[in-house]
Length: 572
Ligand code: ADP
Ligand code: MG
Image (cartoon, rainbow, N blue to C red; front, side, top):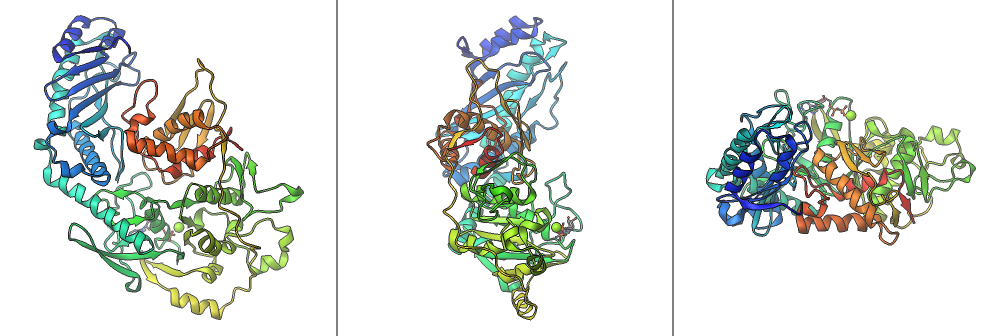
């Protein structure tokens, strides 16, 4: 990289003419920075052959040159929305382009495809004075021979045309851009209102919660029943744009979502899980917002657990195995769910989202009959029902819980919502009557207060690679990271929405592997790195080949979740 070209557009043309017809590696000569009229083109990394991952390109343009009004990116909320809008435009414009010009990935120009959420991504970043756009290009070849003329067409004509169409204010859909930013501003205002009013989740009237299919995050089309809040729990909020929204406000504390099977309970909970992110207009969940620290908790038997204090839930294991630094290579349903809760608390969750469908029954409840049959001293598990109130009173952690069967939970709920044919009813008062009429007969099993909130100092994430080692961390798919030879399974980490987040998490694991030294806590390490990303952009994650254009911002919770699933994680 030291001998990179610095030149003008014409120099690029000369190189391409010179290497036309030569072997593919001659393309390496292109790496460098070139001045075009309104922008700079940086060819960061050239692929080694036509079948390798495509080459990494970057466009840099002065923000003043784009003509985008400054007020549309004046603060972090607007900036993220505007970046997202630009990416959607750029991605849209590439569709329907002639995309093949020879073997392998020849002729391909590709930019990250955004999902339904609005989050920072490395593909488009608005910095202090510059717009940075990262994308990939399949440099064209016939067999393994450079097709210089086709490359000239792509780089000197197609890319500049795409830049003109996508990144200049005059060619953008300006009304849509303003609406996109206004929506984000309103969503941020609604989140502020929620925090002030102690509301942990808001679901607007008219929201469309069900999705097209298990595979698609797009809204269900025909047949979707729009959300309608029960009057007693309905709130109205006026937003900066002048519009107001009405909807269900779920308050801090313990909320049950009950109702018959197939009546939309899990669908509502899933929408709440995703409400930690802002969604685009038309998604149906634009006004479904949740405490941004909310974490979905589920059973995950078979997972690794490293030095987690699960003693509030599990104690006195057979043969005296201690549980205040619990370690296992294959957790049970109950121990995994306990570990997931303690880890979520450690990284700062203030809301837990739990679905009975994906919970371990023995973790959730031990009813009166089981209490009579099996004495407490023979049962290591203190069920969640006996800790959920303390979690709120002592640690300030709210829970939203879907229960179809475990009626004993009515004893501990602050609010009870029943789903009936996809429409929620407020049945809190009725539930109180039921509790009086049919006492559960069970005895509370929690003994004593909760310990201090968990904090673990990290000695190492895994063995540090020696210089020269072929050691890689990479995202294989949205829910799988390869960490050296180790497979880090993230199937149960359900609030990942884009593979770009998983890639960013992989980059975080690489950096945190270097940083862990036994002095900082896991939460400090993760938060510090995310602060750096906030300040420096995705460049904070750049590796030896620069910063790829396919990263997306994860939450600290999901970064920590990956760390927590490492085999070699060592706690002080
Ligand atoms: P539960 O958890 O109560 O058993 P689910 O949330 O799994 O129910 O929903 C059952 C089915 O109903 C799913 O196929 C889901 O897509 C569909 N569904 C959920 N909510 C709605 C809605 N508002 N409109 C139409 N269909 C819905
Ligand atoms: Mg369900």
